[in-house]
Amino acid sequence: MRKATLFLLLAIAPVACSHDDVAAISRSAPAGPCSIGAAAEASITGLATYSELPARVPNAPRNAPGTRGLTLTCLTPGAGGTLLTLMLPALSAGKTASPGTYHLQRPGDHSFDERSAWGEALLTVSAPARYLAVGGTIQLQGEIDGILVGSYQVALLRGPDVDPRYPEQQVLWGAFRAPLALDSAATRP
Image (cartoon, rainbow, N blue to C red; front, side):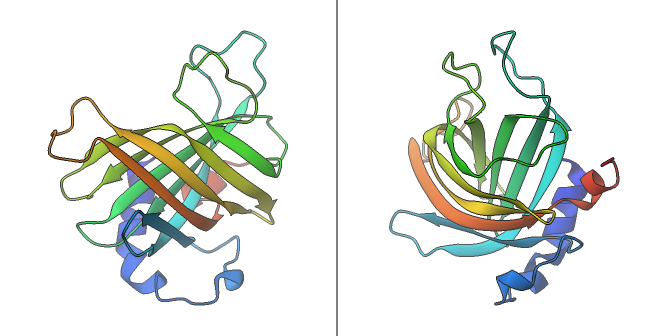
């Protein structure tokens, strides 16, 4: 994710998280609502945007679909907040993301197809612990008028460089209604 997008989310987090009417989010909004929940914890509301990017999928077969990717970010407020990044790397340029189920897996998994997704999370933004997705799903309702709408459930493993005092595994879930990031919208044809 670009630093400008992260800064924007951090700057408006205290204000935008108080909105109750998620259906009122427009494609020109700087961010939309998302939620992150974990076992034995209350779900927390955060801010979400998505960006478009050229898709180059490492270790994918030569004939793998896609020339466009989407990166969704959800950030919960505060120094102890979580930054969740979900990537749909095998979409076709010029087309919206198809509604349905996308399966989270590790990058480079040999079962990669157009319904594959990647993910990672930084737990506690002030002292980040990086977790990588090893399974789960994204239920995408679609890209609706410039807004990415859906829900997710993701299983994560602690990264190899993370302090072993952090839990080895995490499961996060939630929903999102994310407009296209301002820096991505400026480069869209």
